[in-house]
Image (cartoon, rainbow, N blue to C red; front, side):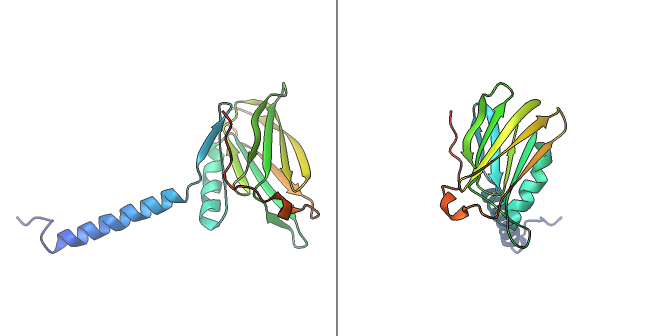
Length: 162
């Protein structure tokens, strides 16, 4: 019986395994990091088609999804570097001025009522958000065309607070 790992097949097998490993590492490198602040996990991203697709795929698995955009003459442009604060019904900030790394942010919030504030370029938008166990919730923040996006350039990675 011949071995599968013959001298001819072994280098080919190693090359295929190496390519698969490199692909897995590349895919992992494109995954936005998960942060935690005040016991709440969150992740943001959506820059580029691969990351946007990933965020769309994972968002139903998170309790809350926030989407950020700025109106323009054609419709809307996606927005990043949005400062996000999520407060529970008692007013306690669970996500406190964290910065989105892209136009999408997901958070693992417990069921309950929240107020979400998104700030970009001097504009502030607030929305109530109801989280029901087992049902993902979504809030879309559409900033007016007059929003000064250029003045809102900050670090793309959120700074988690303990």
